Amino acid sequence: MYPIEVKICSKNGWSTPQEAMSIWGRYSREGVTIHWWGDGTGADNHDNIVNYFLGQADAGNKSVNYVVSDNKITLMVSPDMVAWCSTAGNPTTVSIEHQPTLGAEGYKKSGWLVWQLEGRFGKRLSIYPHNHWNSTACPGTIDLGRIRAEADKWATGGYTAPPVVTLPKPTPVEPPAPAPSVKLAYSKLPAPVKYVVNKDTDLCYMGWLHFS
View 1 (cartoon, one colour):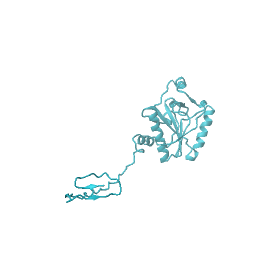
View 2 (tube, rainbow, N blue to C red; view 1 turned 30 degrees about the vertical axis):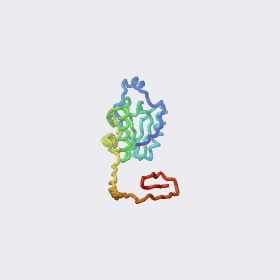
View 3 (cartoon, rainbow, N blue to C red; view 1 turned 90 degrees about the vertical axis):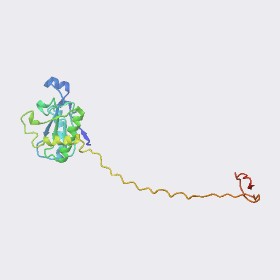
């Protein structure tokens, strides 16, 4: 449904599953962690946030798996890999950064992304706020219940129902008129008659008729 822009962060800012096992002692994809960029700006700030994370990852500080706004979705770290954005939730959840003024289209996109991730990992994912993992105001006013409702709507076909097709009524077909009946009558000529034709014919001698 939605295209995903790809701008992958430097490896300096994220971990592989094997590295996660060494750092945190665990790795799984059992949920998503919801973030916001928290400055009150709108979707027009999306690219600036993406560039911010690119710089933070290059410096070895932090990263995020996805950035979502009303305008688009950007992938920054593969969901199979461990972004550094959710502290204790890093090794077990996929992190999604959101526009703080997220509108209806942004919630629809976020729900679609969660649904896609649930398909990828083959299970229903828990949705956590960033402040589940540590003390922070993030994700502020982002409505996690609304994201879950949107994901469920995608999963149940609420946005992908087939169109209703109304077929035209068939045009009545009039039955063909009956063929006229023809009655044939025969009589014997009183004497032979010679007929002359001007082209080849397969008419045969009928006994009392003679054609030539």
